[in-house]
Length: 125
Image (tube, rainbow, N blue to C red; front, side, top):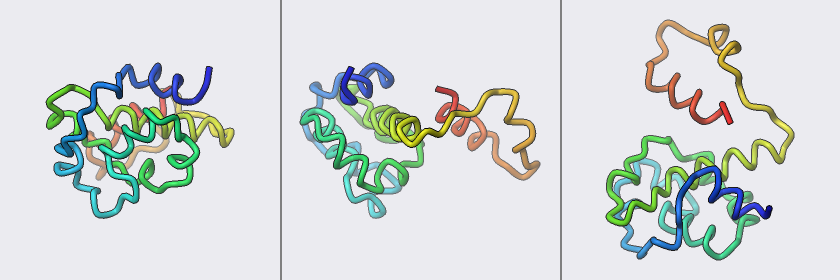
């Protein structure tokens, strides 16, 4: 399975539904920090250009707030594509995800619950 097919499988998203309206990018709080914007990220996946995604900082700048998912009129869910690409890059580098048993040792009482759930969602795969 190639990396694009793996991104589609992990995310459960069909990037071909994207109509390039840019609403996902317009709602992204990390827009100014990204070199490949959310709507462009979808295009890179469609064009099978995973190498450019791996070399960009966008996968790591995504906050996983999923504002892009809420704004997308076609339910493309670019945040899920970005998250899936990030998982593939982590695996490619030989890093393993977190298990539920490892999380209590990492907890800080000042840590927001949303951050904890976001981290678990990202690293459980």
